[in-house]
Length: 632
Ligand code: PRX
Image (cartoon, rainbow, N blue to C red; front, side, top):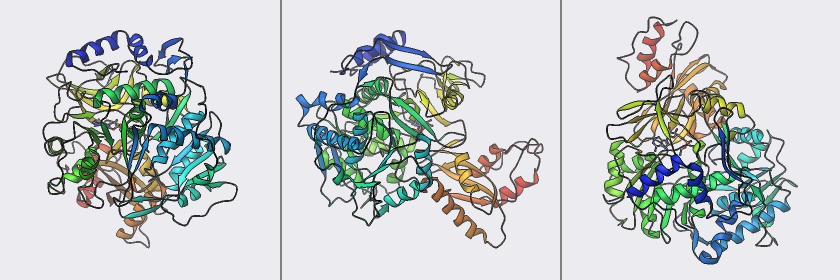
């Protein structure tokens, strides 16, 4: 089947059709998949509820579309190529047939351990093929997976387990990352002390570290699959049954569980993968994300495997054992499409060209960027030195909530412009609105980015709290999905994403709520109050700057700063650790007691000259002190 757009006029034609007749457009794509029962209706929606349903009453199992559908013609084709952290360890290549057998075998093991359709299963694992097998095994038995990035702390893991009342955790003994061996099972054990719903834990042996196994609860992966048949019948699922929950940060409170359902997500992750990357059969595709993030879900596992692609999974980090590791892997497997984050590009750019020079990189046809705005300098370095000036660079804008890529060039088809995500994909109707929600038409406009109508990959709810979903995404502008991002349509009509307009910061492509980091800081017994803002960071895109009011008794400033960093690592994980912490005597507040973040953002960015009028503040004198003590 091919739904691949081939030309610019083809894109324009498909786009128009998708907006004018979305139901015809998406059903034509859905028809090429295997459904146990065809849908009765393509789409029902309103954005007030919100209530969005695609392919109503259609019955299917997504893994039949990944596994059985490819067995006959592509059984011997590599589905997953796995490159280990240590280049001296043997790699693993799983064909579609082998993947089928492993998914069936493990899903049988999960059933034997009591998992049934609808149960929630947490996956807290390193980047090994078993992580993908675990996701697919859940989908095969109709369990809802929730992958938690293995860098999150025990307390973050416990929050997620509790929020979705998970019955099972799939994990490993440890995790190899660069030169480090990271404890994984110990984190799970600690998390499980604060949870009650988990009945079984299946543990993959990866690092052969000493771990404790709790009788009756913990079982080794290799024991769980012993004697299990390597085939089974996939559970019959409804198109609108949940496929997965993925927790992500917002501007308030704890991370929320974004819910994606089976039918729409399947069609959307597949369609966007094939078109954005222009994947051709035989190509080797590599996305460097972790399966703990949405990029790993849609563009390491589901999108590529639905398309029958060969997807490469890398366990390690870009700089281990040397800063040419990415490029070595590209040459080793003759990677054709390479997809990474600007933060990785900037980190590698800092090592200069020497680590790139030994590699030809001539297999590359397409390079991609995701997760944060890519600055022009990084864009050019990536385009010139990795893409060798000949590969289209797709700057893909999307979100956990959108399920798949929303705004991007189609590689080699729609034109590229540095640092511009460019044009919407078929089915996507973006608008730029002003603060009142008026649509800003024409070119040369800037405002907030919204989407006017549903696409198959849109989130359906936030787990256990539908009202929060409505509030967060559908209440700011009536009748529209609000992305939380600012955007500009330039004089040529290209869209450029300007970054978050809410209290979410993007650190190395990871989404972080400022309130979430503040709550973690406030857990330190000496902290009185804190305020967290983002500031421009050369490599990470944004860094975390924390202003903290402390009771200093019995502590030096440096001690406190170290302890606060440890507290945040313990409560959220190392990715949330503030880059800069300033102990302050007070925080600038309005007369109604609201913290003036605008001022704090300016000071953190080193732009304290232009703070505007501060005389209306409750405590204007504090601003001077903050400027004086700013951390450079
Ligand atoms: O601010 C946008 C930024 O990342 C946010 C979504 O983060 P998350 O849900 O973690 O998903 C990341 C991977 C899809 C967006 O609201 N973002 C993502 N891609 C881009 C981007 N900003 C600019 N350009 C992009 N290409």
